[in-house]
Length: 80
Image (cartoon, rainbow, N blue to C red; front, side, top):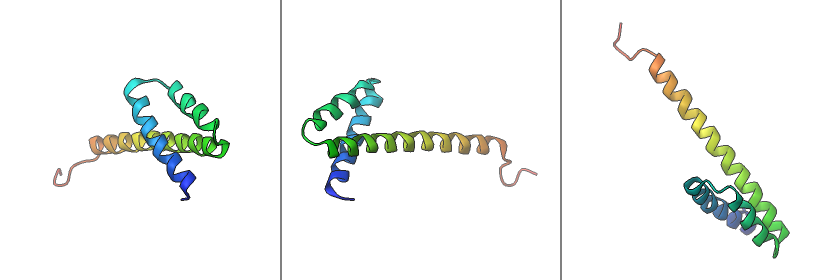
């Protein structure tokens, strides 16, 4: 990735940590507005990184749920 994407992703990761801890979704918009005042390109990269990271988080949660469900329903080796 380039510097814009790298920095945007770092900011997105830090932002999501705060959002997950506080539940304050408006935090993303405050950061985006601050960034956008200086660089629209960086603002767009940040918002994209937030969306990608949120999608990743939801996908990982679903995968874990599916794994847990499979572990409960599949017989353990040696159970005959």
